[in-house]
Length: 272
Length: 335
Image (tube, rainbow over all chains, first blue to last red; front, side):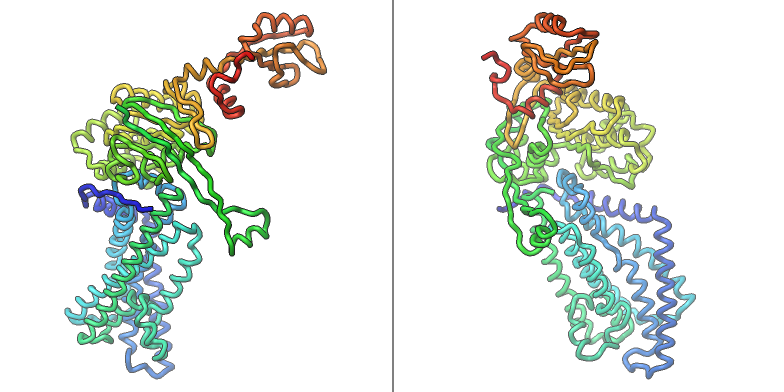
């Protein structure tokens, strides 16, 4: 069965409005805002303590001196402010409570609505990175890279964020088939934390494992931008590193589209 | 010209067949058997622009499935639909522009936002010209009394307030067709009345075509002139309420209160419908038995302290059709 929705004139305006509303909504949960920042600060402090202790009792790895690994961890924690958000949770929620049916009665492209909503939430959390960074500087000293490196980091961060967004969207799309996705989501978060380089830089893993992990999409989310920031990935390798991230973005973007189409097809043939 | 037309519309759902017990549940993890069920099984109907039609049926009769197909959310298994010249499931976005939807069990308002902001978002989604939006909003604020809670987040509204907000939300873009699914469910009498008044006005003043599904038959009696009754996915009655009443209102009920206690109460020409203590309800066909004769027989046989005759309301008529099925002209005719 083919589902062909004809497409009238596209207007961006409603999606911008959705994003704005989502952003404003996030700001109303003041308690969340404070706990978010506080939790980043606590983790920054703990990681600093751990790394200082580890480096004091072991031979420092030549790849990452202490100041670099502390910088790495601090930036990783700041990134987690936007990376750890369940951006397209609203898709899962509206499948759970059946309100997706109402979304489909409106003249809007439903996936764009979900994406706009997630983007709004994330933009608000992105703003939180500034005060979080300012406060973190009370506990840690971080390296400031050259302008070129910083620019490459930002591009890589954006790509990594987008890869994470796709993974999140794909996970939430599974709610079209099974309403219980908490377990899957938990496992994916756990894997990301572990092998994405958020907590432990991948360069500290055994070489054989490292070679596998760096090409996975999870590394594209955290490890690549962070290693660019601390200079472990030199400018000569930027093209390759960013290229691999772009590859994952395209691949997972394609999977996202397919998942949405299959899910929507199931919805229109099987009902909510 | 018909604004909504369906021809032999069918929708078949496939669902997992569940076997009973823990064993069945475990077996279902590994192998699944499916069964098919036609939720809508050959519905042909035609609505003129400006009509207000009550769409009735027991739970699971296929009402929501029909509405979902008309709104373009569900793709029919077979048959055809045309809504204002569009095929809803193929032209979902254009069709969405023409329709308004109120589901009593669900809100399309944004939970964390005040009504005012929900409305502004909807303006943007439907691309309503600002001036028209202003006019409509002012109008709805006035007739639905929204003023005092326009700036309250929706989650803090009472059900009645929220429903009024939902009605305004569904009408801001001047839909030609409005689908109302249980719009008065859970509301108190006053709120129900306000909603009914609003629906009447909408239909009368704006000429909006309205399909109303409800379990509250008072809604239907008050609002609709035509009803479509469905059961098991097929239409069992389509016509004016008055005809339904004529064909099915053949039975009346004689309620007698016994002054003494009797073991068994039986009166020729009537069936005992129920008995609670001394109050006995006797159902009779007014074309076969006159009330007068029945009362006389009752009084001859029993000592009575009270007598009343109850005319059937639309509720009992529909209940009877659900129970016995509908056969045109056949039920209740003297044989």
